[in-house]
Image 1 (cartoon, helix red, strand yellow):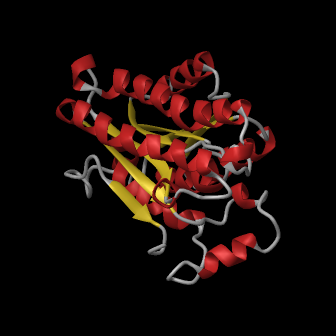
Image 2: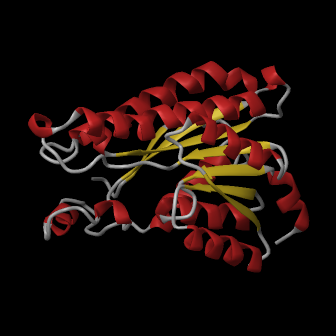
Length: 254
């Protein structure tokens, strides 16, 4: 990999950056030349292992433990990223299902937690990113990519309506923020992932995931790397320079 490519990318902060889609995005972004700050909540050994693997491949990476439910922790994570260089990309990837529940059984605690992680945290992360990247604030521009879900369109009845609603909010945030900062050098987009081979499906009842996969026209579950490639494409302004406010469905036509 050419040194100039690495030097030109700046810093990408990825929330939930050490597992699943986030880990795949971190690896690919580092290979494409970003210095990557991976934000994680727990499983420090996994985070350290990924940092070591990226560095072994010649990339630049750091990991920062931060619970994005906490505003102060978010601010500390961005301050840690500042030490790597100028921020040029944010990937709002961290999320949670909130647990399986019909609406007639959902609790206030579930709703508070899922919206705090899936909506409030991306807003606060976007705030910090805009303050650093916007030309209005003296930045050099950049990109924000939100990791959404096809659930925002499908609704996830009987399972995750609360999760689907939170991802619907993320769709709306994407469109509104994209228009707000487009003239300030920041492109904001969303990748709405389909059924992906990650740990989020571990809580499903036996056999349910297999039934869902049968509904996917492509006939298979996605791999995290396939979602990561779309995320990095949107973050990289060289090939997506006129893409802003897009809700990109990467879900096998599901």
